[in-house]
Length: 413
Image (tube, rainbow, N blue to C red):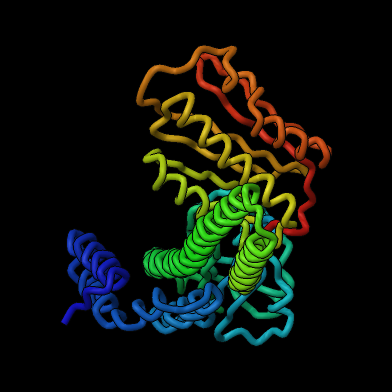
């Protein structure tokens, strides 16, 4: 029985596509081998995509890769900080130095896969001229590997992990090894995407609860403040001292109720984690804005941020939200791109409209020159951090909001 779980349905589609491709090969012998691998590996492949953490996804992919290929070793690396991929899982490896390997662009076989974004295979790791010599001592001399294949595991931000298979004899691994690793890489990508989706769903639920509590608090306190004002106004015409005392007591009681509800609501808000991952906070607020405005917002990230200081995260998110609101309000935008770039100690945000649903305001309006109150406040915050905020009109007449601030790479991976 085929499960109706959306993730398993995706797994089914991958498997069916793989069989459809393999049956078109001219060699019936190869078809039989490849098709048998797919059918026998159905359960393990599902297990890859259903793992709860990125490390577990790659570990499962490594296990399946070695078993499916019958290779001497299999291993995987996961992206951590900026362009760094330490070995996260290995099967069949004996050299104790293996865990010290950290792959970077153009270092070793994995470094070339990182740089080019495509699979590669070498017949003799020690002598291959296409890769650097960084890990030859460990890979070729220490572990004794000759043939090594590597494929990227792709995600929204590019290469998120690397999946390898290796053999002690030259020529053992071939095109079939790359094909199998690519299939497992696809399932690992599905698993990583599902983890992100689950995390985002949970954090969005928390954000919506916070919004609900904040709205309820606003309505409740506003009502009590109105009551206090009405009682105070009525007491002005009160000539009876006892009546004035009753009015004061009512005001005190209403104020006490407001303070109690304020404390209780703030306590509930405080229980939610304040240090939500930057990406989750940004996605959450932009998705909420999409629901309100009906405009589609596309986020383009160059590297992923974690543990970003609250004041910087808040400024970047506020700028993204303000820029999106301006594009919808003044430019009638139907599609907006929010681009975040980290490069050489600078963090940049650009909010630009990609499509409009109506006539644009002419350059020189508040939206184009950046004289609105929200923009002025954001500019002041950016300047206090040594950065800048500019809202300028491009040749098409649309406005682009650009934030640029200094930022180190301690929190970037």
